[in-house]
Length: 97
Image 1 (cartoon, helix red, strand yellow):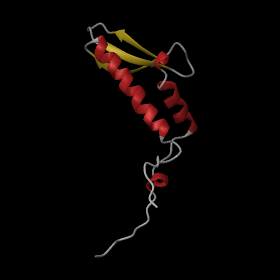
Image 2 (cartoon, helix red, strand yellow; image 1 turned 120 degrees about the horizontal axis):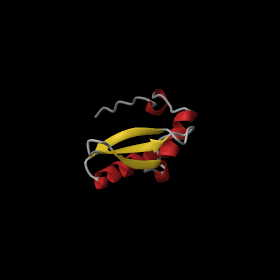
Image 3 (cartoon, helix red, strand yellow; image 1 turned 90 degrees about the horizontal axis):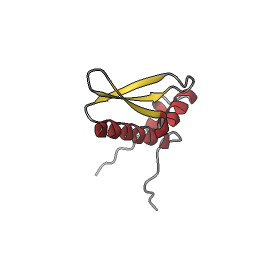
Image 4 (cartoon, one colour; image 1 turned 90 degrees about the vertical axis):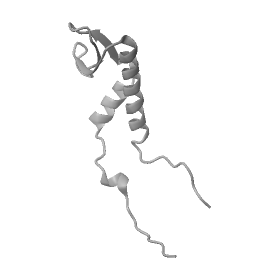
């Protein structure tokens, strides 16, 4: 039996988020920074508030129902919360002795 040992460090080889990106992710994970607006065509659009300008909103998704729009917001919050969880590197899930 042959074992191949290689050393890779995938975490440091990927581009790391800068401070502005981390600040945006933290902002997006706060549900009070989100809203749902109805468009003229009847669709609902999810938007998050700009960090620097309280009057500016950034559109993210369009959905047909309010329930779908809220689920899209919750999914976005969950996605960016996971990204924040791994900023300091991979999470150790098991070690061996």
